[in-house]
Length: 208
Image 1: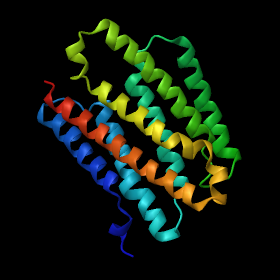
Image 2: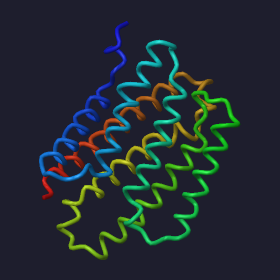
Image 3: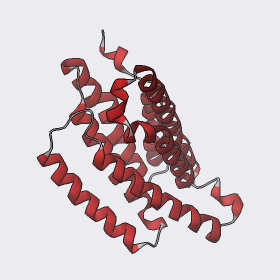
Image 4: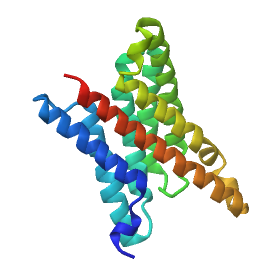
């Protein structure tokens, strides 16, 4: 198999989202925004490091672990100004410490997802807090023009699609049909998430 055989549709969408975000920032003569840095980061891992590691070693657990946790950190940096919860802020700092300890002390495998799952749940809480703020503080029509709204919706949709797999991963090995169904659901979640990135990039492109 060639390298291109390992590229998924959602990864191609992420690549175009990255291009739109970066080109939009450059075209409008502004510094790269946090979304552009995030999309560059995840594109490097999704299309580069993770696929290359899988192509060479037939495993990419380490690349997935770094990319997944890096995404959580970037999500928080993007949304951190949109909530007023000190508790969530402290929980996020605690999560960073726990994730570092976890990465150092635990062997990274395809089932090393505990801290990633906890991180996604924390980000979901941050996004829901942001939604509350947007709905109360902003005119209804402006919500649809806010790139963070679309990014938040896509992340929550991805969490909904991936949560069964994240929670019941250890049980799936005894039922192949259920495993395939859950992975199909995860694929849908990845596409929705990447489309959220794309829409967010387009929303930022339109901003002057």
